[in-house]
Image (cartoon, rainbow, N blue to C red; front, side, top):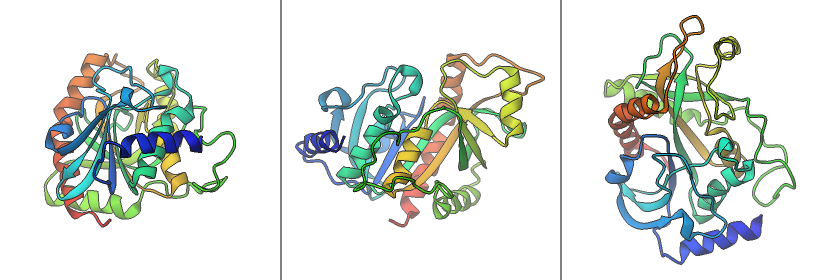
Length: 272
């Protein structure tokens, strides 16, 4: 594993990118961030050894190195999911690589179904904690002791200081921002009404099919993490409605400008 990380890192460094302080994972329908970055180096995933390739519509599959709000960032335009058939360690691999390149802060966004009845489509939720119901973990197998501990502590996977910063900036700029618990599932099938009722019962506010593998890996690496979900639809168990992909993408794109505004504010004010 370490040899693969180093090989991919060296392949990236051969492009002579600016060394990033912050990595941003862009979720479904949130590609507008790419237009805001002053991109210096763009690397297609398929050009990198050992790097997986996204099969999800709307995920372009590029690493974008550049400047945004006077911060050096790398944006992952396209992510990977268990339902695509990737192993947990493969999904986590890009996080290990961007950390090896230099990133110490991870900002991740995702599209999520709302479970909390107070939420509305296209609103944002900063993730306070998560529940892993994927049945998977990217740290299974031999541990890379030089990267992190065998049993990483998950008491506080999402950085409190970054959460408070996001909340304060949202309040100051009149951006609707919920705070809640994200539950990750493997997918690709959507939740049944009974499953939705169960997820609400155990304390989840939003559900999605990404993020968990990446966050566990980032915790293992000692990175600071901020997670933000775009609520693409809200399903109540007793009034259950289908959520076709077209609706999910449309609501994510509708929220895109608001999420972009918030991320730019966070980058402008973040303590590195």
